[in-house]
Length: 338
Image (cartoon, rainbow, N blue to C red; front, side, top):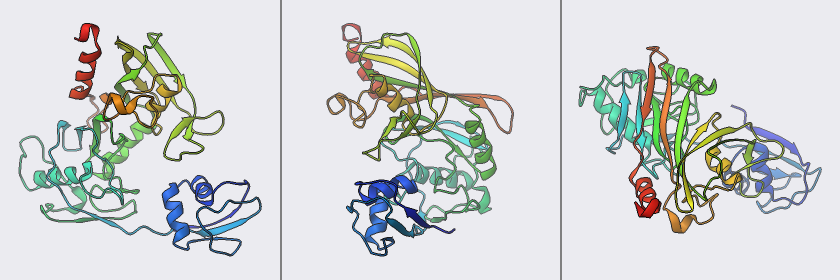
């Protein structure tokens, strides 16, 4: 894959690392690492990440290839909501990273899934299903490491972008139902359902403030926040189409317990849309107001997912019980503290 780039600056007085992160759709940290690693030249010279760019400057370089990761199965307990020979649905706990990365290569949902499917293939706990790592064509040893490569035909569950079998996203702090495909064909078919918006997703959240309308919809394009690149925002121009509907379940003392129905699936969509209309999710340090004193994480939960099974052609509805921290908050702030 050819990763070289050549850019003529069209902006003024912005840091080089910030500018490259926007232009190349990479993180600011990666842009900074590229510059410090001498992979970027400005007007033929090696710059610093803090360089303030000027219009007509020539920036050229290349995005270095990342080395493959090696992941080992880890015996991490999984709360399995549904499982058949094609995919499984897991009730993800709070603060578990889903996708492995170069900063989180262990303790992820993927490490746990590798262990679970390896045990299935080796005949353990096979009363529920015949789990498989199909492309391996053999049992996955308990201590075996599988190399992740950035290629669509990668081994086992792995797919391009180091997202093995995962067909949709949940943020680290978000709990609830997430699907994991057991083979590349099922992953492709499930991903198509999400792309075509044929999957009905229901989230539950507790937000700051008492919402006035019983039901409402937020439509607003979402893109990177202009200054803090890890945050998203509703933009007046640019970004990607996003739509979320909401319904009140219960009004609490200064808070609201509600359901969210995202039509699209943009990064941080529910969190951003709620903050945009003045009801940030309790515990959301990125978008909330009183997050640090209210909860240890954003109180957002992927409660239900509904779709037609891509192979069996039957209706599937999977629900994940609301987690204890949300139940406790609800009781503590409900009528008369009940």
